[in-house]
Length: 190
Image (tube, rainbow, N blue to C red; front, side, top):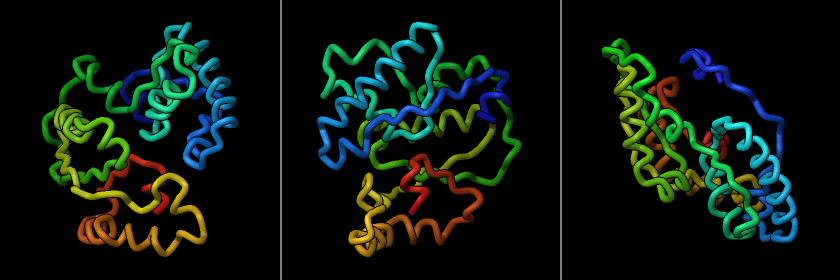
């Protein structure tokens, strides 16, 4: 929200509506269908107001596309929720380009779902950072070990930490934490 304000926009934070991602992951498809119907109806009403909708967490945004389409089909409604980079990239011309003011690099750790479903996401983030005069390096990592709700479950904790130790932990240990950007909520929880 602060970024959008800084860019001269007037963001509106919508009321919380569960999107059902955890229900879907756990196989509670009846409950997920109900949640998805409710949230899709709400998002369709917002879309009718011609308000661009931007979601912060890539996995939740993609759930509105993929899992909602799968479960609701043509009853999904007519709305689009964009990831932050999907919203920013086509609008870059609206914002003044900057010369490199920040010479220190930023490091992007992208959510694994974002990387697989939106394979150009890291490159697009790089274009956005370049436009604003910043240097962004993508860090080649696999899954952080959270894998949806997996890493939040006590009996999976050790395995989750082991997965985290394969690529995320060693990469983060080599870089200045204050310069590391992590797109997924679960990844940041790890």
